[in-house]
Image 1 (cartoon, rainbow, N blue to C red):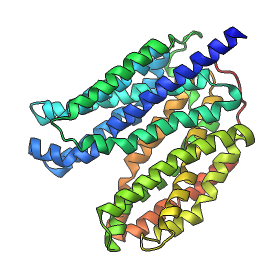
Image 2 (cartoon, helix red, strand yellow):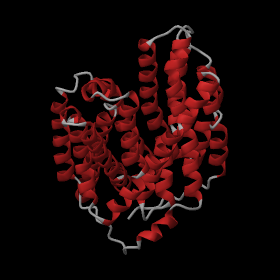
Image 3 (cartoon, rainbow, N blue to C red):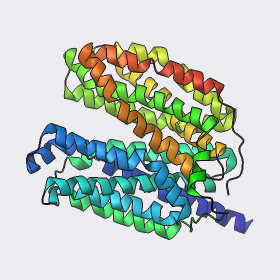
Length: 386
């Protein structure tokens, strides 16, 4: 009994540590975009150049995440979980202290690698130490930590480039705690050749990834078009910021509810229901504005519903590939978002050719094939992770 209690407490400590790491890592990540005007002024480059920093960060932190997840399985996951937020924090808090723009690009790339290393390692620790009957809940709390961090990142950025390095100390402390709490994460199973990892990305996991890409592109497209839509309707930065804040808070809450619900009624049921029921409300939201009394409540409902499937998708991928939870997590957490991020420019191109509202509705329509794919997915087995 005492041993069981001790094991449970240790598992909870691990989950809290990596969730704190997720919080600070994503807070650092969310600083980059608000600081682009200051970086442009400091380094005397074009808007296109500072925008390129976001592409570099997306490449190293998201698109390459499955590769980093494989490295995390072959090396000690403990280092990835601890050093990830440390690399991200140091890289992004020192952006105003490198001598030339090329060095800044390199610094941002290194910071992205830190984030890319952390996410699969952190998700794997949560998956392997959570109770099987509460796996969705624990995953959703881990996901909510990142969402909360993303909401706080712009606040950090508000202090300006000069004072930003002080925030690196938070990452140092959390990295030390994470390293002290987490056990060694070396893959104990028989090593397999790198080429055989391609076999993980097949069958239902491929369709799950496609579902996530379509869902992510719909959400990203709306967020990208929101400022332009509200500006055209006579509103400004204040309303945009408030809308995004409500959407972010709702995303965190929706993820927690969706994760716990999936433990009770099944992963695929929540995936299908969360996406399909969102579509009519999302369409109404795009056609609305803060002038309508229902705008902010509807923003909360849509944000919670469409994002309720995010942690559920991660757990589903882990249960599809229980022997490679880090790689499966990276496919859903990084590769799907990164791939959608590479395609979101198409939404902007459509807005130039038509209107931001039309482009947002076109992005929303991607939820229909996403829901169809979700409906065809097999329910995974709640197996015990190694």
